[in-house]
Amino acid sequence: LEYQTRCEELARRVAQHLARALTGDSHAMDQYMSCPMAFVRLLRYAPVTSDEKQGVLACGAHSDYGLLTLLLTDANPGLEILMHGEWTRVEPRPEMFVVNIGDMTESLSSGRFKSTRHRVVNVTGNERFSIPFFFDPNFDAVMSAFGQSDGLAVENVGDKDKNNMGNDGERSSGRGRGTALSVTAGEYLMQKYSKTHADYSRQAS
Image 1 (tube, rainbow, N blue to C red):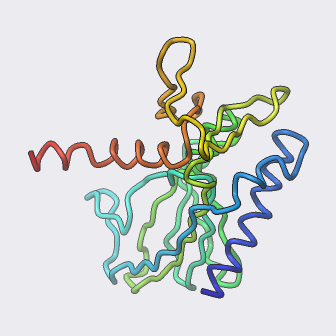
Image 2: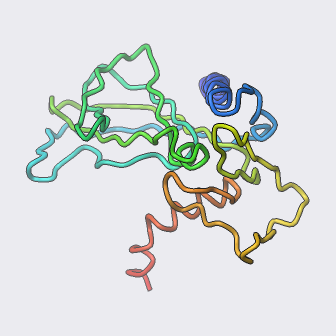
């Protein structure tokens, strides 16, 4: 519990830096993180050497769905991020956090901040552990994409009608990366999960 509390404090500070970079106001999103969606996962990677040519990876390439991820790793290498079209190894530094930008931040910033595409390649054959901390705004915080001069458009739904429609009679889905986002943070994540697991739903039916 203490670890999660400390991670949340750090994530709030990182979010404030993002808000300042995008709006000029470090506290632009503070009120929408009064009850953030935040949780820790404990990940174990099996002691199996990866074989990229055979498609065997400890974890396939992906980006995180939400706002921010703070990642703590052990001393074993494996994490790689995609930079300029090439996979680059992130050397393990157990005393430091890796900060991943998520898809939600990319959408909110209209693509100014890119979500971090990453994977895990086990080059040692050792067992490996990592602890990601996922941090997102309040479930009912409604966020719209903003530009450098537009400011941050974030609204807590609260007791308001959650089904407000736009001029076209429909709400923006916010499903694309780097596209306009006008849904609650919770809805955005649920859409991401639904899209990712759509094949499983079809197979089950």
